[in-house]
Amino acid sequence: MPPKAKITKEMVIDAAFEIARETGAENINARTVAEKLKCSTQPIMYHFATIEELKKAVYAKADAYHSEYLMNIEDPQKGVMLGIGSNYIRFAMKEPNLFRFLFQSNYFNGTTLLEMIDAEELAPVLSAMQGAVGENIKQIKEIFITIFLFAHGYASIIANNSLKYDEEIIKAHLEQAYKGAILAVKEKIK
Image 1 (cartoon, rainbow, N blue to C red):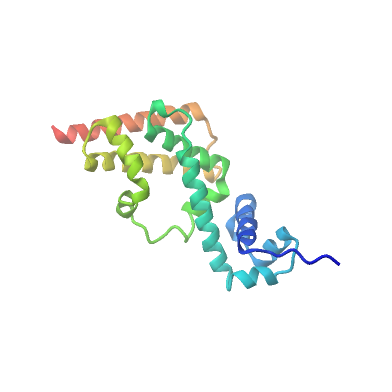
Image 2 (cartoon, helix red, strand yellow; image 1 turned 30 degrees about the vertical axis):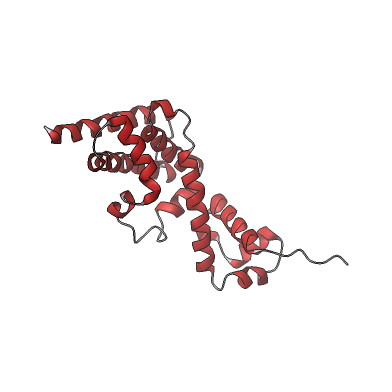
């Protein structure tokens, strides 16, 4: 008789991640993960004392997946910020369950907008924007916050099936918001 396949912690996280993608993070439990892995619930509970711990691990995996998705910019010549904004909205359309888990659940708490803007992960984006726009970092952060809030609003509406995704219209609106944010910052300087 062959030995039973060992279920690793990473396998459990991957299976739960797929459940979050397919049907929503609210459907992650020992039974659904075990069904996905074709095993008993014992390996799941061996690696994670609680389902809450598993969901936190899945959230971290989803966050890394989302960050990678954002930085895969199709047309960087049109601007890093516009590319990231477009990807953010596109992610909500392609991965609505993950978007809701990442940004519309209790797992996305404890971070203020100011903490997010000062995160070291955002430094390369802000630096690229600064090179393109030519303003100081404080002004670049103001532009970023405006674009982030605009993109997040669009993405949230799309992720909740309240708006049909139209890439050309969204890109045009995003570009208008970007130009408007830059103009508003320049107006403050005068």
